[in-house]
Structure formats: C-alpha cells, structure tokens
Image (cartoon, rainbow, N blue to C red; front, side, top):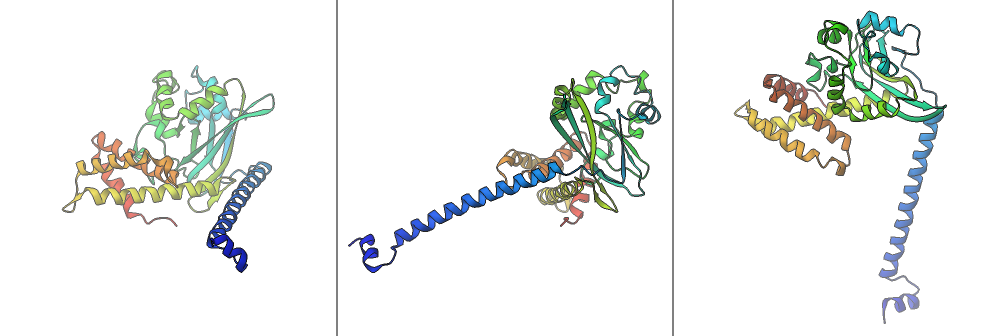
Length: 323
C-alpha cells in the first residue's frame, strides 16, 4: 500500500502530507510577515508625514526669504552677492550658524520645490564632519569645508557646495573681482561630483524652493531635530566602515613593520573592485562608506601625499568601533 492509503487507514498523516502542510504554513507565514512589514513601513511613513519638522535648537538658518539674508552674505562672504549668477543660486543658498556653546559635527538640510502649492520634489543633503574619515577636511579648496562648526561659526550651504568664510576667502581672495566662485567651469566640476544635486536644481529652476534645517549632531549634546538620530547612525556607520577598511588595508600592506605603498594601492584597488557589487550586499551603505574611504586614500597617494594617507590609516585603525 502507498503512504496515502496507510495514512487514511491508520488515521495518521504521512511524511509527504506533513511536509506539504508545513510548506503551506511557511508560505502563508512569510506572506503575512511581508504584508505586516509593508503595513508597518507605510504606517511609519504616514506618521513621519503627519509630524511637524523639528529644527535643531543649536543651529539657526537664514535663507533668501529672510530679510537679513543679503546683508549676512555681504558680511561673511564679501563680493558674492555682486556676482551676476548670484540671483540664480540665491533660492538654494542657506546660511547655517551655530548659536550654541557646543561644536557641530554635522547637520541635515532639506530643499523642497513646489509648483502652484503642490510639492514636486525633495532633495536632502547631509553635511557631516570630514575630520573623522576624510582627507577633505585638510584640503584648502572652498568646496571641501569641514562640517564642524565651532560656537558662533557660519557655513553657506547649497545642494552643490559648502563654504565657510575662511575657506571662501582662501579660495577667492579677490572676491567677485577675481576667480568666479559661481562660474560655469567651477559648477561643471561640482556637477560631476554631485549629479543628483545638479538635476534637482535644473528641474526646480522655475518652481518655488524652500530650505529647512531638519537635524544636527552636536559634540556634547548629541542628536537634535527630526533627523538628528538618523545623522548619528550615518556618522557611526562611516566611522566603523573607515575603521574596518583601515584595519584590512594595513594587514595587506605591512611588510616588516612598515607600510608598503604599492601593496597599499593594490589593496585599495581590490576594495574598489569588491565595492562594485555593493548592490548585492545586505549592507550597501556600509560598503559605500568603505569605498569612499578607500577612494580618499587613493586620492592622497595619487597626489604624492603618502604621509597624509598613512596618517589617515593609522587614525582610522586606532579608533575603536562605535556601538
């Protein structure tokens, strides 16, 4: 007799029937879990949409819609408002000032374009402290201003760039009469680095644009604002990624207690090859952060700054992983 006949006569389920039932139950459970997860995600999004944006208390935002915007621009960034391209960029510019007694490690701004009262598009930009993970904080170019704002510090932020008064004066000492800070060649170079920002500005050119400060990460007081906790998670992810990448590269590049530059470059190239498959990873943001750290090291070595790259490696590997 077959299994089905035995199961009918004995009143028991055969192994085949039991496996079929368990498979059906597992499929139903997975469908229910997927639907419940989707419902939870939708509910979370609806709650976020219904919540008012809470700006961080430690920072103040001044935009082109505020009456004192032009006077503040003239005071902190002399000659910029006289630029013939300033009116085109003004709706996207935001002056961020630290009004607390604490250092700012990063902040988040959100640009919103509206047409006849209807929201068309959002663009969010995180400006995080470069001193933790990058070569950019030590570069003298205006586009590479560190995000750290000391008490009373000011930064001019757009979707395309971030300037402080110090880096602006260093890069453009003659103001509007010298190199053009908003010139087409400079914007083309920035466009290559930030294509999404350029696309947002191009699409919203004929729409009303507003800017909001949605989160901040302070050195002593931690996360503030609606996006502050998210900013802290991003910073922690970058710190851990740079630490892990530095440990892996040093293990490959050390020879007799010294770091061999050629071995280091080969290790960086291997990391960049692996990063091409980040879309298959369970943690693509972590892989992207490791990729960016490797690229910054390669940038420094390629410009003859091997000492700087080694210093960054040792700093990143010496930090403990954030929990």
